[in-house]
Length: 548
Image 1 (cartoon, one colour):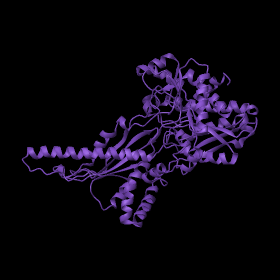
Image 2 (cartoon, rainbow, N blue to C red):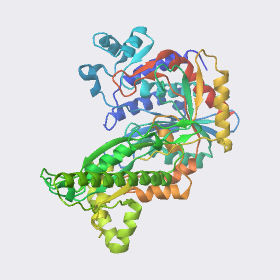
Image 3 (tube, helix red, strand yellow):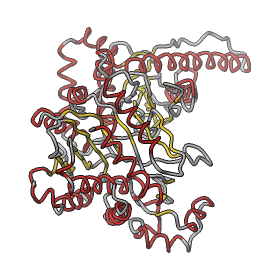
Image 4 (cartoon, helix red, strand yellow):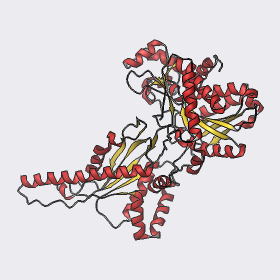
């Protein structure tokens, strides 16, 4: 790899960073169009303009799009192909406050930061001159610039390049990954039309210290997954002046949070690598007005990381935990009611509540047995009504579906219905069982061993931050996919995944990213030396060795 590429990557990183592309806005296309423009200016794509194209996001009111570029080596006739991905969007800039106009101008922002108070670690890095600050410079304009520059370098010497490259610069990674989800069917289409033999997917998303004082640089083979277990909680309403006559759904909700939130027993482990514990992302009751009546229903959902657990296994685990939480509420209520009765000299009778926790799939089956076709008619009508609102959140869509099905059930006793809310990110666990997995593991280990660098570089098994790498494969176990589909209300309507295409790809993945700190914070910053001079060499050598 040419040593001057580091300077080209730095220049392109700054150029891309200055184009604002906040997720969920039309301006995402500004960055995508700049990427496309850069490609069509390259000599290879001037000769082969058909090798670069836009991939539109299906049914997107913002009309967003991604870019896909293909380079076909002219040495030999190898069908081996490496897929490269990087996202072009960023999170918002409101966290920069009065400096938000400089958020995407790294060089100017550095000067402005000298006039404000910064956290000690960020100030030290600013004064060192070794970092670039700015929104997206780390997550992940540098990664995109790295891949674009490597693609250009390879395409300039395509006569001596054996194998093929497909690069997808995708939108919406920070939101719902609609860019990658649109790219996946294009990848399987290319595979069929061109006879490509995909070897692996390489991403260049950011890489950060895992703990205070961590100076190791990591290459991640595999990626963490994400599920969002959600809970529709039905209590029993009561007057605020007579609360023991009811069962407060907020009480149940809080007990579930206490059982699950930050509880490391719900972490997922594989080969000594452990996910972060679950964290609640939303908790609220569903009572629309103020009154002295307690709420009837509430809901909440969690972010769960996965390394090895499939959706059906996660559902079983979460239901068990919810049963524990529900029973504890009942036991505590009876204990407090007993104290209350004793204090007032009232006779005590055990409260009538019983633990009941079921999955959405179980709820659907119970109501289907009672209502038959009427249930499906109600669901179809509700879907139509909800989909008429283009802005409806996918989590609210799922909640409304559960609510409607439960309302048709004859059993009106307190219950917790457990289901999955979108989105779903499958984990990819590269065990080394298949030939492609063995090849990727061996390649990465070899590249790390042979790189000329003073950095401590280490391979890990799971990229720890949710990313588009997840969509390079999908669970093949029948129960896993069925459990996901049957317990995610609105799957196939409001929320879609190209499951069959993902299973067809079934590729091992690796993330070889730039180094920096504070992604998604106003002190987001990129360390220049490793990011521009070392990480690109790792990426390049991994590509070449995979195609060898």
